[in-house]
Structures are given as C-alpha cells and as structure tokens.
Length: 125
Image 1 (spheres, rainbow, N blue to C red):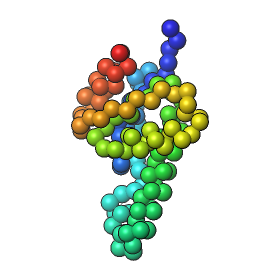
Image 2 (tube, helix red, strand yellow):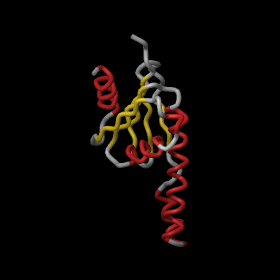
Image 3 (cartoon, rainbow, N blue to C red):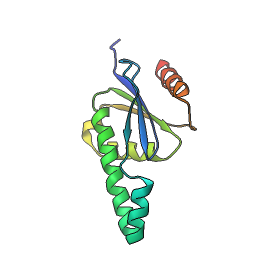
Image 4 (tube, helix red, strand yellow):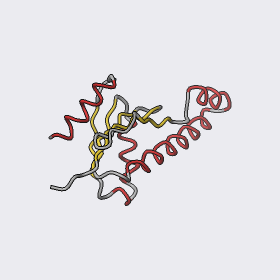
C-alpha cells in the first residue's frame, strides 16, 4: 500500500489551520486578509464595493490554500462555516486538483487537541 500524503484543514472565513499528521509540522495557519476592519472600511463606501472586496480577498485566501493542497494526495476540509465548501467548489473548477481526494466535513468549534484527533480518526478509516 502506498503512503499517501494527507492533511486536515480546519477552516472558517478568517483562518485555516493546517494539520499534517505525516510531517508533524509546527501548527501552521493561513489567515484571510478580509478582516472586520476591512469590511467596515469598505462598507462605509458602498455595500457593492464591500462584497467585491470580500470576494477578491476570499479568492486570494482560497488560492493560497490551494497551493498547499497541491502537495497532498488526500485532504480533509472541516470546520463550522461554509468556507470549506466554498474552497472545495473553488478547487473543483481547477484541473490541477482532479487527482486529489478531498473530503468535506462540518464540525463545531474545536480545541487544538480535538482537531488533531478528528484528523487522525478520519484518516484511519
């Protein structure tokens, strides 16, 4: 049986925490640039501008996560918001990700230990 590279990504719209069980990397996270301050600042100008800015920044966030995902064979996206599903849909449009198995699971907020255990249990199946 081949040794597949696996990663779990707990995410919401502001942060993605990368949990690589194979390499035991230091806790790594990727932050979205779309913050409450950015939303407030652009909303003062126009709601339309705010939505465009949010869409652009989310796309940049998803692209950054996609660059990480390209290094893996099996990915678990999980978390409490729809960000994981949006990322999955974003990745499905790109043929670079067609050979990567991507699982999507909805979870509540979790502690770091719970996230680690969730990823470990998922990949044991």
